[in-house]
Image (tube, rainbow, N blue to C red; front, side):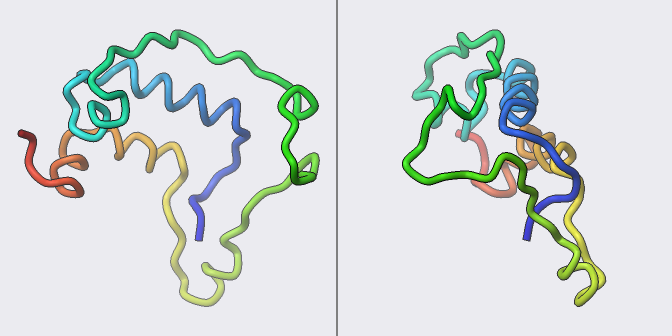
Length: 101
């Protein structure tokens, strides 16, 4: 099961950085993830697959598909950007991780 839409790792990282620059550093899960340190990244630099070698070989282009999920259950997840934005909303943090301390 995966979100609707398509992206690559570079676009995904840029979208995360964009959302992260708009939240408070005391946002519960963000504060834990950054250990309370301020966000210092300002941009993401794209690289090629050959510049980031991994032990496993990877296809040049691949996408996860929800077509079978939708066909079978008539249900699909929202677009990945919509879901990413939800993670950065204070209401989401309270619902999933409990009240802010």
